[in-house]
Image (cartoon, rainbow, N blue to C red; front, top):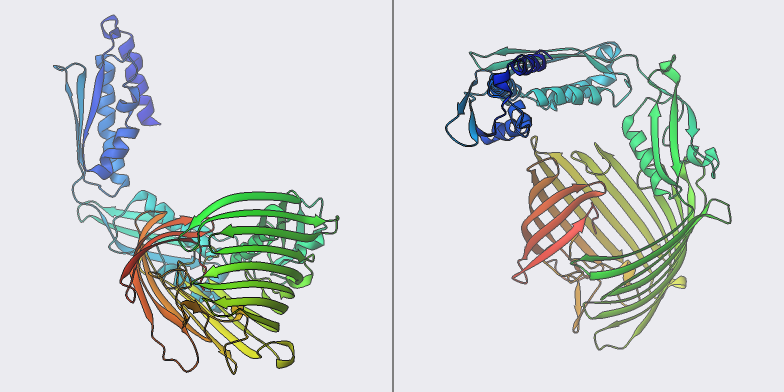
Length: 580
């Protein structure tokens, strides 16, 4: 405010002189390192006032003096506490040249960080690991340049981290940045007050009109008396949104509750239109252009049953799907009755497949577990070989595991699943047992790097491959598996076609370096193949570079990959963390 008053006082005083009423035109030139020059060009009062044709020479000089102070303040906010600034006015040119020169000097670096926690969390044995993680993940560590913006962000991040579990009201109690401009060192200290431990109390549903509040309550992953956990609420919100019942959902504990041991959980929902129609054209490098039509009714006959239908058409796959989902019951349990019909022409294998079944889904995680019963009928033809009719009544079980720091774009943690099932001899053209293991692990590599490791292994136990419907066999290759190879081009060669095998193994390692908040570059290597029992495993290897963009539904990826076995480069486009 003092600087604003200085400029205003100068303008008012100068306007009192008749000789000072003549306005001048001027342009501003900034000479400084680009990281400082850009904000100076946008934020200086000199720049904001240059369009005013009534600025007098006296007022301009007042703005120039203020610009010196503004430049030094901006440099200090960026960690340059010994910056030298000056402003020159060249009146010989037309318009006048106003030159702002800023020599920042050497930057101040963080020399010491002290982070302390006070309150009940300080004596909580279960919280010690989380408090240690706060110090480890502190975003402005020793050796980093001190910037005011980074300092504020680091404090907010630490308080948010402490408040993510049990201590919902955690806050910054005090903080101090001691700057030594001579030694160019910053010594930081921050004290976090945990506040009392919070536990979930009664669930309060707000905004439900068409649907009963019990529908929202049944999707909750938490129960009264459990420790507050923000990650569980994020999962809850995502599950509610994915039901299709709601356009948005927000779950928050009442941090102002008089009794933190039973703080109400407030869930505010906005109901979506019950009937929705979608049409779109998409493109990916696996199947190229795709036409998609979808129609859904999330309140079928006003019963809260959900009906979903979809038609997908591309140059390799033509598919129709129909699903009926029962309303969620306690612990998120619901039944999914489904029908599928597809006509696929992939790698010279033709497969016309029809499936009916039911899946009992349970669990309140992002990806629930399920028990599945299905009947599949298929006509398959590999190349010029005679067509083969196959069928199977399949009983399966899927179990998922997840522990990650974020739901959409994790940087640390793991995700895994187990699929096991089979078809008996009396109910299948070829009896078989099937097991698939899948896992992903995420590791932060510094402040701007992410490392992701993924693997998938599958095995089908049967006397022979012939007679097993293709959805239960394995092929790989493409955008989300082994990059550098065509979509599902890795499998068992049968004549002039590639067909599914009874064994699968795929592994991938990928490092992403983020250049900004949303953009990054990645290097990756994929290896794997699908093969049949009795054959040797020969891994197909692909590696390359790619661009990454963070989006609300996961990272968008544009990859250029080299397939070692084919000696070809391929372009791959995909989005999200799907691994097959």
